[in-house]
Image 1 (cartoon, rainbow, N blue to C red):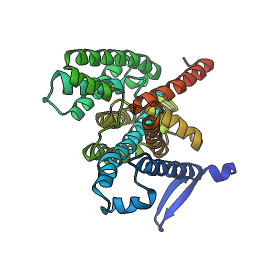
Image 2 (cartoon, one colour):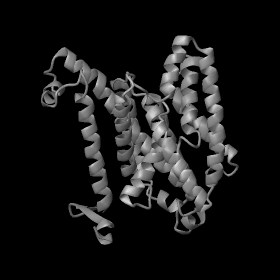
Image 3 (tube, rainbow, N blue to C red):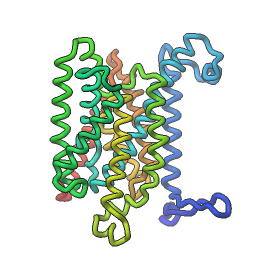
Length: 347
């Protein structure tokens, strides 16, 4: 494909509406969507309790046996819906933070946002149970963490590398609070929370899927509207010279990313490294210079359901939390990014 074919083009919807599109990005998103759909079908049909592919439409229409309906409609499909939604939320949040910090390491994992959300959820579920719902606690924890990063960096969100360093410290303190909450909890509650803190899609229901779906419906259009965020990546002086209020755009973007991360963590825990890897993979596949919100969302959703399928089918006789799989794969990717940034003299 030539460079001209890969570049932006106009997609006309009638005589008055025209959208700027990138053919390569559209193709990549469609391919990833097909991979995600194939993963969904494999997850629903694999294993001793899986429903044969030929019978799946009947079960989805409500015509299967009670056992089949439980497996598909109560057990596996809600889990998949949560995985797709949370993966998309993590992907968009990661794209926003990497754009705001102008740093491929600037994801919610690295700057302490995921750990802050986990601390808020642990506080709501273990330290002060019943005061606020766990999702609300996760959201409050995420905002407290990002506020601590904003204050600790000394220059708010205008100091990308200070944000990363401060975020590592904030994340360490948040995880210390989580460990304290687990020590104070009963053994049964501590086991449940410990499993959740690894990042898990097990035992998820339609209410969890609805939570992350509402967050995406409300926040994804706001993320897509942040078209000026790409100009902020050029630096505050360049963005201001082009008529962009860098501080206001950055703050709005961070609020959207915090809300997306809080919603995702609330339904599946702090799944590691999806927010870090999905935007980077999306950029490389689409060859885009901008955040690429849609591509990051589709990549994040595909990565999470693929990792969950792998976690369920590891040949050790135990179903592991998906966060263990993403942490292992993401740790390798993080090491690659650190080495690359070190060679560039950026860290």
